[in-house]
Image (cartoon, rainbow, N blue to C red):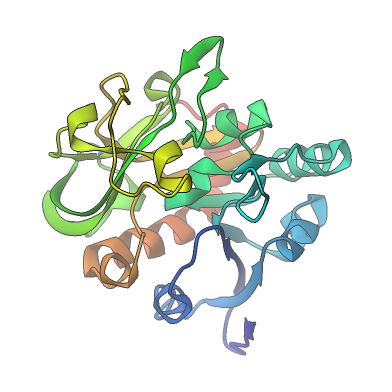
Amino acid sequence: MSIINYSATQRLLTLARGHPYDRAAFHTLFDGLDEFDACHAEQPVAQRFLGPQAAQDFDAIVCYDMPGVDFTAADAPRLLSPDPVFTESYLAMLEAGIGMVFMHHSIAAWPAWPEYAEIVGGRFHYHPAQLRGQSWPDSGYRHQVTHTVSKVSSHPVTEGIPAHFEITDEVYLCPIFEDDVIPLLRSDYQFEPDNFYSAAKAVAGEMNSRGGWTHPKGSNLVGWVKRCGSSPIVYLQGGDDAQAMANQHFKRLIHNAVKWVSSTEARDWAKSGGGR
């Protein structure tokens, strides 16, 4: 779908699909970004857009997708390795400086491609896995958590956001590369294994189960900024469902993130090394 905005001065590409999502709620997230002409694509077709040409055709890309995980396979979720041509093209796109905003389950994409976790700043695991030479159990999830999110950095992405706001959303217990990102938002939820359920059990048909499962205590970081190549990158853990996406502060965060990653300021910051 493409929403043609003839008064727009910039172009936004939104990518989606992974687990089922509310399409109307997702598209409503971008209402009010009047300076952007928004185009939308879903996986697997969306992969065709991710290359150096994207950096010329678009000012920012929002990823709400989960490629590289096949939930339709008999042994689901089957982890798929990306084609080397695709990964080369994707990295070339980042070297060209396209602004990227990753949302929610996009942190679980391409688990068989180690570089992807470095791009986003962490990884959600559906199976036990190796990450940066360390063994990790499958990750944890918890739906419909009402928690308080606090700003921990003054940044264009958090501009206009109150110091603390409440949101009801899904939260993740998974490895996050805190030392490699600039923290923006933290949750007051306790990221302990007893507060989460096993992702591997969920995909095996045991929803909301943690029997025999454990996980190291996790980070309460739910929003950050980083760079990869010459591209400014934002990750926001929120946005699981329509209720979360309707939260006015979360919507403001998305708008701020899109505007920031598409700005000359952000791209110059990324090209200069992305210092804190």
